[in-house]
Image (tube, rainbow, N blue to C red; front, top):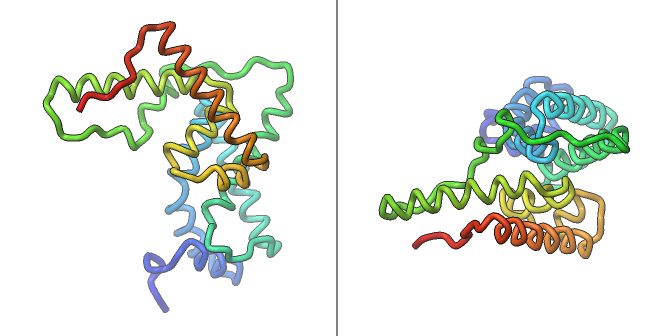
Length: 199
């Protein structure tokens, strides 16, 4: 039998369904950072993200054991959809309550993908500041807009995939992205933030 490292996420999920608990351990190791980062980006609170992450994996285990997963070649999308549903369930229970505010513990500085090309030091510093400013503006967006921006730019998903994961139409996903960009432009203008990267 192949070593776990050589197996796809989908193959590991099927092995777990057949009773191999070690396959699930490998699956968890592979997906936990990406999934937690996604949840944290949307909810902006570490303790809440922990709770939702754990709830997500309880549901994943339950659904796998009940045979509700079929190998479609997109295990991470299936996983993200479950996390999205857990997040939305939490938001529904919080109707009328104030959302969590960003703070030093959840400033998104741990997100990857913000590396800058190897250019002269001054331009590199300018670019790093721009990317920090962009992340701060993204934190201020409403959760649905923040989520679509994260999925599009950090997970590099298509709008069709975003629509499937979030359970909305493609037009709604496009609309959320449009409003997110409009809001970020307004924030940049209001605070006189330059968003053009140095080359």
